[in-house]
Image 1 (cartoon, rainbow, N blue to C red):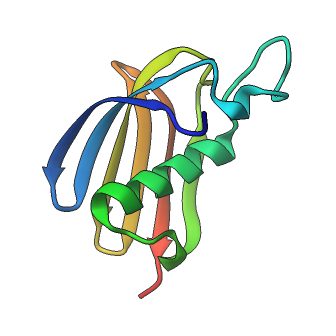
Image 2: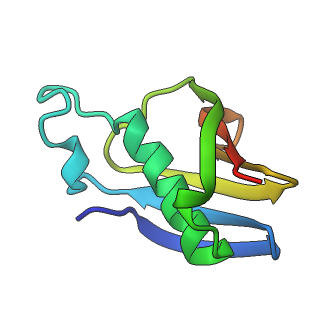
Length: 113
């Protein structure tokens, strides 16, 4: 499996959506990314944010010029339930993976004008 299980979607506007995700243990990216203690690679978190921005907000990932900010604060192990918030404001796409008071990662990407 390449993508997490989507438990729920909550469109907040045309430019903002929150997805409830379950990161199951059979995600292919856990294989080999630390055999005794698998974690979800940061690049996958970025790729998923871009994938879902395209799927739900119709934003093509080829429109991005560069990463303005990227921060990974907690590792995401298999079988984690969390939320992914994606929003577009001006020329910035921001995303955040979180659950309650725990932020796993966040980022901001600048769109080409």
